[in-house]
Image (spheres, rainbow, N blue to C red):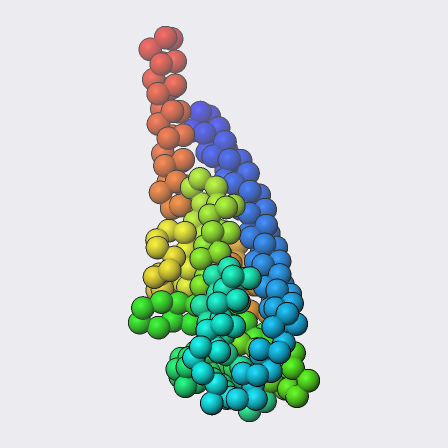
Length: 252
């Protein structure tokens, strides 16, 4: 009876933990979407403030100087946190400032192509180089001459990990995974999120309590209890039941 009661208490506790994890994932999803929406609004506002400078860069294209580019980039970084760089994308998906920013990574080219094809960015994901990772936001270029062109901004992903840490409760593990590549973890609070990337086996996916898609991205947010926590919970309950049984036996 004591053992049965112990396991029943453990199940009730795990059920409570599941309700907490459901709430945590909902809050993170909400903050992620609010963050991306806010970034897009800030990009559009910045374009209006710097319209003349951006038009100048657009007209000069490959002839724009690094000094002209850096003036706009410095202002962008001062206005929007975690900005890495920006460029201008024409209606064919080509960057007009490659002589300054360099060539796109393959992941960047893939995201640009899907955005140009669909007319709007709906496949947000992390892009990795040998030394860093980032994500890109593409907003319609605000200049009058631009049709089907985009203002491209690359951001450091620090805030994505910070949001996870903000809501993570003890014994919980949070993962940002690719929805289009099952088992690929892009960010997690379990390691240095800026360098983390690994594949998990299909069977491991069943260990997650919740896996929720993030709209307009290639991401899923996954959460689970630490495996050690679950096993320790049942073991402690069993030990407690046995000790109580021994004490009652000695007393009787």
